[in-house]
Length: 266
Image 1 (cartoon, helix red, strand yellow):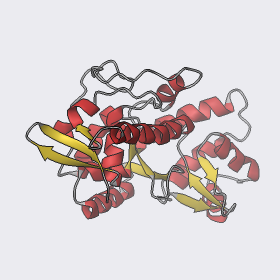
Image 2: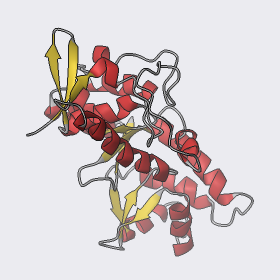
Image 3: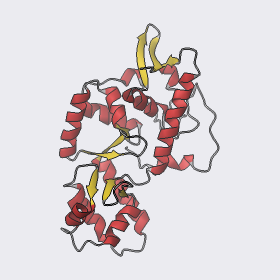
Image 4: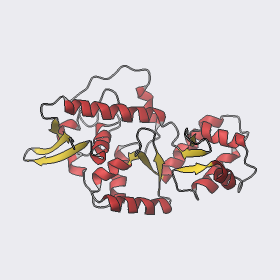
Protein backbone atom coordinates (compact mmCIF):
# COMPACT_ATOMS: atom_id res chain seq x y z
CA UNK A 1 0.00 0.00 0.00
CA UNK A 2 2.78 2.38 0.78
CA UNK A 3 4.30 1.99 -2.68
CA UNK A 4 2.60 2.50 -6.06
CA UNK A 5 1.32 -0.83 -7.33
CA UNK A 6 3.21 -0.80 -10.64
CA UNK A 7 6.52 -1.10 -8.75
CA UNK A 8 5.38 -4.54 -7.61
CA UNK A 9 4.01 -5.67 -10.93
CA UNK A 10 6.72 -4.64 -13.36
CA UNK A 11 9.05 -7.54 -12.58
CA UNK A 12 6.34 -10.11 -13.25
CA UNK A 13 6.12 -9.26 -16.92
CA UNK A 14 8.21 -10.90 -19.60
CA UNK A 15 10.43 -12.82 -17.21
CA UNK A 16 10.94 -16.51 -16.56
CA UNK A 17 9.68 -18.14 -13.40
CA UNK A 18 12.06 -17.59 -10.50
CA UNK A 19 13.58 -20.62 -8.76
CA UNK A 20 12.11 -21.05 -5.31
CA UNK A 21 14.58 -20.16 -2.56
CA UNK A 22 13.59 -21.81 0.73
CA UNK A 23 16.39 -20.14 2.67
CA UNK A 24 16.23 -16.65 1.15
CA UNK A 25 16.76 -13.81 3.63
CA UNK A 26 14.37 -10.94 4.25
CA UNK A 27 16.16 -8.50 1.98
CA UNK A 28 16.44 -10.77 -1.05
CA UNK A 29 12.74 -11.37 -1.68
CA UNK A 30 10.97 -8.73 -3.73
CA UNK A 31 8.51 -6.67 -1.73
CA UNK A 32 10.40 -7.05 1.56
CA UNK A 33 12.19 -4.25 3.30
CA UNK A 34 15.41 -4.12 5.31
CA UNK A 35 13.30 -3.76 8.44
CA UNK A 36 11.25 -6.84 7.58
CA UNK A 37 9.60 -8.42 10.60
CA UNK A 38 8.85 -12.07 11.33
CA UNK A 39 5.28 -13.08 10.57
CA UNK A 40 5.28 -15.43 13.56
CA UNK A 41 6.17 -12.54 15.89
CA UNK A 42 3.64 -10.18 14.31
CA UNK A 43 0.66 -12.34 13.40
CA UNK A 44 -1.95 -11.27 15.95
CA UNK A 45 -2.96 -7.74 17.05
CA UNK A 46 -5.70 -6.43 19.30
CA UNK A 47 -6.28 -3.22 17.34
CA UNK A 48 -7.44 -3.04 13.71
CA UNK A 49 -5.68 0.21 12.83
CA UNK A 50 -2.37 -0.94 14.34
CA UNK A 51 -2.60 -4.14 12.30
CA UNK A 52 -3.32 -2.13 9.15
CA UNK A 53 -0.43 0.24 9.74
CA UNK A 54 2.11 -2.53 10.29
CA UNK A 55 0.95 -4.52 7.28
CA UNK A 56 1.02 -1.32 5.25
CA UNK A 57 4.82 -1.26 5.64
CA UNK A 58 5.07 -4.80 4.27
CA UNK A 59 2.54 -5.04 1.47
CA UNK A 60 1.38 -2.90 -1.50
CA UNK A 61 -2.22 -3.41 -0.47
CA UNK A 62 -4.26 -5.41 2.00
CA UNK A 63 -7.03 -7.92 1.69
CA UNK A 64 -9.73 -8.18 4.30
CA UNK A 65 -8.74 -11.82 4.86
CA UNK A 66 -5.24 -10.66 5.84
CA UNK A 67 -6.79 -8.41 8.45
CA UNK A 68 -8.91 -11.31 9.71
CA UNK A 69 -5.69 -13.29 10.17
CA UNK A 70 -4.27 -10.55 12.39
CA UNK A 71 -7.22 -9.48 14.55
CA UNK A 72 -9.19 -12.45 15.91
CA UNK A 73 -12.43 -10.59 16.60
CA UNK A 74 -13.87 -10.39 13.07
CA UNK A 75 -16.94 -8.50 14.23
CA UNK A 76 -14.69 -5.84 15.72
CA UNK A 77 -12.68 -5.73 12.49
CA UNK A 78 -15.82 -5.08 10.45
CA UNK A 79 -16.96 -2.35 12.88
CA UNK A 80 -13.54 -0.71 12.81
CA UNK A 81 -13.41 -0.84 9.02
CA UNK A 82 -16.80 0.87 8.76
CA UNK A 83 -15.63 3.57 11.15
CA UNK A 84 -12.34 4.09 9.26
CA UNK A 85 -14.26 4.23 5.97
CA UNK A 86 -16.64 6.90 7.31
CA UNK A 87 -13.66 8.90 8.58
CA UNK A 88 -12.14 8.55 5.08
CA UNK A 89 -8.98 7.00 6.48
CA UNK A 90 -9.22 4.08 4.06
CA UNK A 91 -11.25 2.63 1.20
CA UNK A 92 -12.41 -0.91 0.53
CA UNK A 93 -12.49 -2.33 -3.02
CA UNK A 94 -14.13 -5.46 -4.42
CA UNK A 95 -11.69 -7.78 -6.21
CA UNK A 96 -12.51 -10.25 -8.99
CA UNK A 97 -10.29 -13.02 -7.59
CA UNK A 98 -13.05 -14.46 -5.42
CA UNK A 99 -16.60 -13.83 -4.29
CA UNK A 100 -15.55 -12.48 -0.89
CA UNK A 101 -12.21 -10.91 -1.89
CA UNK A 102 -11.83 -7.26 -0.97
CA UNK A 103 -8.80 -4.96 -0.94
CA UNK A 104 -8.15 -2.32 1.72
CA UNK A 105 -6.16 0.78 0.89
CA UNK A 106 -5.35 3.85 2.93
CA UNK A 107 -7.00 6.87 1.35
CA UNK A 108 -3.81 8.91 1.01
CA UNK A 109 -2.13 6.00 -0.80
CA UNK A 110 -5.12 5.60 -3.10
CA UNK A 111 -5.12 9.30 -4.00
CA UNK A 112 -1.41 9.11 -4.86
CA UNK A 113 -2.10 6.07 -7.03
CA UNK A 114 -4.99 7.91 -8.64
CA UNK A 115 -2.78 10.93 -9.39
CA UNK A 116 -0.22 8.73 -11.13
CA UNK A 117 -2.93 6.97 -13.13
CA UNK A 118 -4.42 10.28 -14.26
CA UNK A 119 -1.02 11.49 -15.49
CA UNK A 120 -0.49 8.28 -17.46
CA UNK A 121 -3.95 8.21 -19.00
CA UNK A 122 -4.29 11.85 -20.00
CA UNK A 123 -0.76 12.76 -21.09
CA UNK A 124 -0.89 15.93 -23.14
CA UNK A 125 -4.56 15.51 -23.98
CA UNK A 126 -6.43 17.46 -21.30
CA UNK A 127 -9.85 17.24 -22.94
CA UNK A 128 -12.29 16.17 -20.23
CA UNK A 129 -9.60 15.82 -17.57
CA UNK A 130 -11.61 18.03 -15.21
CA UNK A 131 -13.63 14.90 -14.40
CA UNK A 132 -10.83 13.60 -12.17
CA UNK A 133 -11.24 16.58 -9.85
CA UNK A 134 -15.00 16.06 -9.83
CA UNK A 135 -14.49 12.37 -9.08
CA UNK A 136 -12.26 13.07 -6.09
CA UNK A 137 -14.31 15.94 -4.67
CA UNK A 138 -17.86 14.76 -5.23
CA UNK A 139 -17.80 10.99 -5.72
CA UNK A 140 -15.04 9.59 -3.52
CA UNK A 141 -15.91 11.84 -0.58
CA UNK A 142 -19.60 10.98 -0.55
CA UNK A 143 -19.81 7.42 -1.91
CA UNK A 144 -18.13 4.97 0.46
CA UNK A 145 -19.52 1.73 -1.03
CA UNK A 146 -17.53 -0.58 -3.30
CA UNK A 147 -19.87 0.13 -6.23
CA UNK A 148 -22.02 2.89 -7.72
CA UNK A 149 -24.78 2.95 -10.32
CA UNK A 150 -24.67 5.05 -13.48
CA UNK A 151 -27.35 7.55 -12.49
CA UNK A 152 -25.83 8.27 -9.08
CA UNK A 153 -22.36 8.58 -10.61
CA UNK A 154 -23.58 11.14 -13.15
CA UNK A 155 -25.52 12.99 -10.46
CA UNK A 156 -22.49 13.32 -8.20
CA UNK A 157 -20.17 14.30 -11.06
CA UNK A 158 -22.66 16.98 -12.15
CA UNK A 159 -21.83 18.92 -9.00
CA UNK A 160 -18.59 19.78 -10.78
CA UNK A 161 -19.91 20.36 -14.29
CA UNK A 162 -21.72 18.86 -17.26
CA UNK A 163 -20.94 15.15 -16.85
CA UNK A 164 -21.01 13.23 -20.13
CA UNK A 165 -20.23 9.72 -21.33
CA UNK A 166 -16.73 10.79 -22.34
CA UNK A 167 -15.99 11.68 -18.73
CA UNK A 168 -16.98 8.23 -17.49
CA UNK A 169 -14.89 6.67 -20.25
CA UNK A 170 -11.88 8.65 -18.98
CA UNK A 171 -12.46 7.36 -15.45
CA UNK A 172 -12.65 3.79 -16.74
CA UNK A 173 -9.55 4.17 -18.93
CA UNK A 174 -7.63 5.46 -15.91
CA UNK A 175 -8.58 2.33 -13.97
CA UNK A 176 -10.74 4.13 -11.40
CA UNK A 177 -13.98 2.43 -12.42
CA UNK A 178 -14.82 -1.01 -13.80
CA UNK A 179 -18.17 -1.76 -15.38
CA UNK A 180 -19.93 -4.76 -13.84
CA UNK A 181 -20.54 -7.62 -16.25
CA UNK A 182 -23.87 -8.64 -14.71
CA UNK A 183 -25.31 -5.10 -14.75
CA UNK A 184 -23.71 -2.62 -17.19
CA UNK A 185 -25.36 0.25 -15.31
CA UNK A 186 -23.25 -0.54 -12.23
CA UNK A 187 -19.56 0.18 -11.69
CA UNK A 188 -16.99 -1.12 -9.22
CA UNK A 189 -14.58 1.40 -7.78
CA UNK A 190 -11.16 0.04 -8.68
CA UNK A 191 -7.46 0.52 -8.04
CA UNK A 192 -5.39 1.58 -11.07
CA UNK A 193 -2.80 -0.93 -12.39
CA UNK A 194 -4.24 -3.70 -10.24
CA UNK A 195 -4.22 -6.41 -12.92
CA UNK A 196 -0.71 -7.86 -12.42
CA UNK A 197 -1.19 -7.84 -8.65
CA UNK A 198 -4.43 -9.82 -8.93
CA UNK A 199 -2.65 -12.34 -11.15
CA UNK A 200 0.12 -12.64 -8.56
CA UNK A 201 -2.46 -13.03 -5.80
CA UNK A 202 -4.18 -15.97 -7.51
CA UNK A 203 -0.96 -17.69 -8.53
CA UNK A 204 0.70 -17.12 -5.16
CA UNK A 205 -2.25 -18.69 -3.32
CA UNK A 206 -1.98 -21.81 -5.46
CA UNK A 207 1.80 -22.00 -5.08
CA UNK A 208 1.77 -21.77 -1.26
CA UNK A 209 -1.01 -24.38 -0.99
CA UNK A 210 0.85 -26.63 -3.43
CA UNK A 211 4.06 -26.26 -1.42
CA UNK A 212 2.30 -27.25 1.80
CA UNK A 213 0.35 -29.99 0.06
CA UNK A 214 3.55 -31.76 -0.99
CA UNK A 215 4.66 -32.10 2.63
CA UNK A 216 3.93 -35.40 4.37
CA UNK A 217 1.53 -33.86 6.88
CA UNK A 218 0.68 -30.82 4.72
CA UNK A 219 2.35 -28.54 7.25
CA UNK A 220 5.51 -26.49 7.67
CA UNK A 221 7.04 -24.25 10.32
CA UNK A 222 5.85 -20.72 9.68
CA UNK A 223 9.35 -19.35 10.30
CA UNK A 224 10.68 -21.53 7.44
CA UNK A 225 7.73 -21.02 5.13
CA UNK A 226 7.88 -17.24 5.30
CA UNK A 227 11.47 -17.32 3.98
CA UNK A 228 10.34 -19.05 0.79
CA UNK A 229 10.66 -17.02 -2.36
CA UNK A 230 7.73 -17.69 -4.64
CA UNK A 231 8.26 -18.30 -8.35
CA UNK A 232 4.83 -17.28 -9.61
CA UNK A 233 4.02 -14.17 -7.59
CA UNK A 234 5.87 -10.85 -7.20
CA UNK A 235 4.30 -10.49 -3.75
CA UNK A 236 5.99 -11.36 -0.48
CA UNK A 237 5.08 -14.84 0.77
CA UNK A 238 3.86 -13.26 4.05
CA UNK A 239 1.23 -11.45 2.01
CA UNK A 240 -0.14 -14.80 0.83
CA UNK A 241 0.16 -16.45 4.23
CA UNK A 242 -1.93 -13.75 5.92
CA UNK A 243 -4.47 -14.09 3.10
CA UNK A 244 -4.68 -17.89 3.37
CA UNK A 245 -4.81 -17.89 7.18
CA UNK A 246 -7.51 -15.23 7.27
CA UNK A 247 -9.61 -16.96 4.62
CA UNK A 248 -9.37 -20.29 6.48
CA UNK A 249 -7.42 -22.20 3.80
CA UNK A 250 -4.43 -22.45 6.15
CA UNK A 251 -4.51 -22.70 9.94
CA UNK A 252 -1.74 -22.19 12.48
CA UNK A 253 -0.88 -24.61 15.28
CA UNK A 254 1.45 -23.77 18.18
CA UNK A 255 4.15 -26.41 18.81
CA UNK A 256 7.26 -26.54 21.05
CA UNK A 257 9.41 -25.79 17.98
CA UNK A 258 7.32 -22.87 16.80
CA UNK A 259 4.14 -21.99 14.93
CA UNK A 260 3.09 -24.48 12.25
CA UNK A 261 1.20 -23.54 9.09
CA UNK A 262 -1.08 -26.40 8.07
CA UNK A 263 -3.50 -26.84 5.17
CA UNK A 264 -7.00 -26.72 6.60
CA UNK A 265 -9.16 -29.79 6.02
CA UNK A 266 -12.34 -28.27 7.47
